[in-house]
Amino acid sequence: MNLKTRLFGQSYAFQSVKDVLAKANEVKSGDILAGIAAGNAAERIAAKQVLSELTLEDLRHNPVVPLEEDEVSRVIDGDVNEPVYSEIKNWTVAKLREHILASETTGGDLRRLSRGFTSEMVAAAAKLMSNLDLILGASKIINSAHCNTTIGVPGTLASRLQPNHPTDSAEGILASVQEGLAYGVGDAVIGLNPVDDSVPATIRSLEKLYDFVTEWKVPTQICVLAHITTQVKALRQGAPVQCLFQSIAGTEAANNAFGVTREILDDAYAAGLKLGRATGPNIMYFETGQGSELSSEGHLGADQVTLEARCYGLARHYKPYLVNTVVGFIGPEYLYDNRQVIRAGLEDHFMGKLTGIPMGCDACYTNHMKADQNDIENLAGLLAAAGCTYFMGVPMGDDVMLNYQCTSYHDVATLREVFRLRPLQEFELWLESMGIMENGKLTSRAGDATIFAR
Image 1 (cartoon, rainbow, N blue to C red):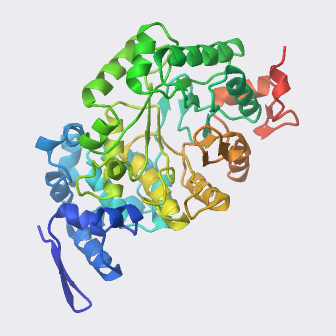
Image 2 (image 1 turned 30 degrees about the horizontal axis):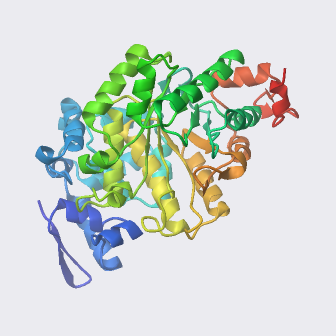
Image 3 (image 1 turned 135 degrees about the horizontal axis):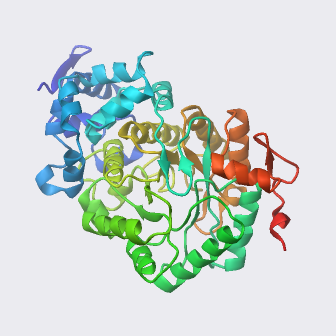
C-alpha cells in the first residue's frame, strides 16, 4: 500500500489511510478546525492521487476508526456481502469512480455492488468526483422503501411536512399540517420536531397527528422527532408510532454524545416492527449532517465526509424508510459558506444513494452562515436533478422553532413542476380526491387550508 507520491517536483507522504482521506477532501471549515485538512491545493491533489491508487481492500482493512474500538465500524464491516466484495476488492478507487460514471453502468449494477462497499469506499469515490460527477452518479441509483407509502419510485419527488411550533401548540401544528397538505406536501412523512421531549408530550403530539391523518385518510406516515428512547417509551404505552426517528453520527463516541448506542437502536427497531402502526417493513428515520462528530468531540481525527458516509453505513443496517442530511444546519464552523454547503449536499446525497438507502436532504442554512435562500434553492435544484428522494417543506421556508431557513411548501411544488416529477402515487391519488391536484398539477384550490374545515 503506497501512501507517497511526487507532484510538481515535490514529494508528499501521508501518515495513514485516514490521513489520505482527510487531505483528499474538498475544502471544509470543519476539517480545518480539526487540524486535519490539506495545507494547500497541491497537497490536496497529491492526496487525491494517492487515494485514487488505493484498492478497496486497502480501505476495508483500514477504517478511520478500528473495528476493535468502534461499534459503528463493526456494524459497517459486518454488513458487507462477502461474495460481492470479493469481486471488487482489488479495484482501485479510480476504477470504482470510472465504473460509477460509465454510461453502460446502470443503477441496478450499483445497487448490487453497494452490498460489498464499506463507508470508506463510498467516501473515497466521492472525493474523486466533481459536483457534476456526484449528480450523474446519484441520478443513476434508485433506492425505494415502504412504510405506509412507497418512496424512491422513479418520477416522484416526496416531501417531509415539518409543522414545528415554538410552544408545541396543537392548533398551530395542525394549521401548518393543513396548509402543507393543501400544497401537496407531506407524502414522505409528517414529522414534528417537538419543543417538549417528554413522554407525555410526545404521546399527545403523536395522537393529534394520528387522529388527523386517520380522519382525513391521508396516505402518509407520522413521526415526532423526540429522542428515540422517548419514542420507544411512548410506543410501549400504546402511542400511535409509525416512523421511529433518531439523529446518528459516524462514530461510537459521537453517538454516545447523542445518547444512542447500537443496543438502543436494535431495541427500537425491534419494538417498532412489533408494536408500531405502520405497514412497513421500513420504519426507521435517520438524520445526519457533516460536522456533527466534530461538534460532539467524537471525530477521532477523521474527516467529516468520511464520517458522514459512515452514518449511512450505520443507517443501512436498519433498512430505513427515510434518511436525510441536514446540510448547513450546524453552522459555518463546519461548512463555512454557500460553496461548501452545496458541495456537502451533493456529496451526502451521492454517498447515501451509493450506500443503498433512500436519501433526502434538508437543504438549509443558518443566519450566521455565508449563504442565503438563493443558495439553498440552487442546491435543491441540483439535488432534484440528481434524483433526490425528498426535501423538507417548512411554512415560508422559515422554521419558527428551530430558527433556521429551509425549503418551503412552495419550493417543493416548484421543483416538481420544473423537473416534471410527481408526489408519491398513493398521496397523489388522495390529492386528486381532495381537489388539490389534477394530472400532476396543483389546482386553484392548492394552498387553501379551509378545505379541511368542517
